[in-house]
Image 1 (cartoon, one colour):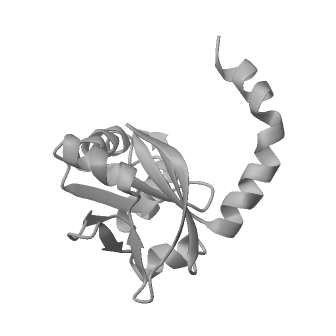
Image 2 (tube, rainbow, N blue to C red):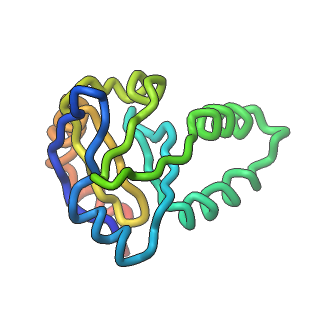
Length: 144
């Protein structure tokens, strides 16, 4: 549903403007609410409300008697908040999430099918440079 890479900058009030392409997808699919939380690799994950509920069910099913599951769920869910785009397609990202993802002003917004990832532009470039040369190797290991 969400695809592509978009370079953006937070406005002077610290708001993120969702790419027009993603706003159009949301409009066409009657998506009003998103959920944002700490992601992996120091990015932020953004899910539609429907996808968030699927993820929530999956992670709630992890056994709370396992220390790793408790730690993961604490960090994942304590960082989560609901976001609704304003009429200009902007949203304010909480400071604690910007701190986690090392976001200052320049960001990358990346569509990853069922979620959107928000990266510090610097960290995205580092990730991309490290992994782009291994794309075929990764595909070979994962895809049959």
